[in-house]
Image (tube, rainbow, N blue to C red):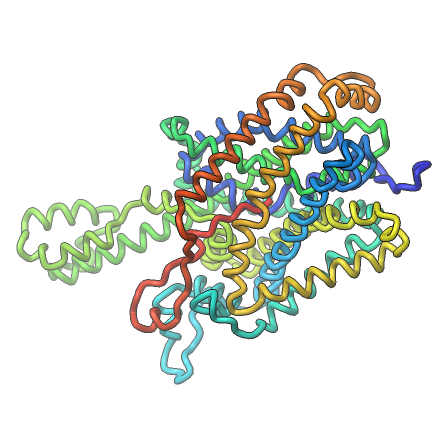
Length: 564
């Protein structure tokens, strides 16, 4: 304990692991691989690493310095800098509250899938039997078993946001469990959190390493890895690639929520946060690349299976249409036979030309199909897992890893609320156990709305608007306040007081010029995109349209998920 009575981390390692556990989250697994796929594979690493140096690292350093110097949560820290900036800390708390309300819902989904993994046949691997017991459920047959299990069994999703059904009991219980575990991990403040992060920050890497070994040995994995490591350099001329790189760095490091300020406030005054900022930022980015290798191996496996299924369907179509012998066409010669039969029997081929065009088999096209967010985590991965040997084992490992990544980030999110509020005298009179419990119960009760039949649509709204645009504004004001209200010279004197040396020219140029300009550019981009987007729309799972034979719009392909 320090003289001011504020608890400290037991060691600098605990602080580093807490930051890693917070920053390395679900976005590293399901957002970064999507952006790599969207922007030309490995070529996306160039704008990503440049944005890390120009934006992510300097702002991460800045927040740690503020927390360690002021030894207060976000509200108290910014009020100390200027009484007029107290609202900036309050904005961080409110944004973290919004995030906490829906972030633990993802952990509830992970619990749901984890519990369902202990079955002889994975429930998302086959369609359930219909009520007449005459065959599979029609809704599932039209979609896929993995889509059906997520949207119908897991979410029990309604056909629109206006249809408010009851609470999904299973999901509600999983959400209660998620919040109960979160409470147990933070009940004694930094002392209990410091012990937990040894596990939440390290075990996911063990699972990722196991998945890496398994992934690269999967059939067709090499196709996915070639896709990732064959950069499309033309994407560097695409402004969207640079904007997405800046956005990913910003949200992945968890800037603006107040979590980093709260964590750093428990450091010893002379702790070397500069080296820790560099280490955590590099670990975060390295994890994104590591997770992408695993993901692209699984992409390759799934895309190869889909491609060969397509070739087999096409082979059967040709055999039946042209009455050929069973062994006349091999899988490797399907495309040659299509061209040959089209030339030799044009009239007969014309009868199936539409089917051939609709079912065109293209491995590159399969690999180009980019999916992010819940679509990647709970549908694409589930689809791949069910085709692996011992799928139950890989399912348990995967969803347990997702759970630890989610809980690790939740520790930072909830600390960003509790720490600044506990700095107020009236709140500090309560015990840690009582105050933390009240915050968790409050978030749980509000979060139950996400477990209703329309809850996933509200989840999307919160995810798109609650903690994206507001964070850009918060961090922009933060860097302007430090550089031009508090003053760079005063700030570097504080750093010298803590570290024994002043920050070099790189940090000062980033804080004073480069990072603010980048944030202003992102801010303007978001405003323009919002205006040009027109009236917001969403896609929905419609049970009636499915039974009528219409295609199901896959919500997961269009959700804009930016989660740490």
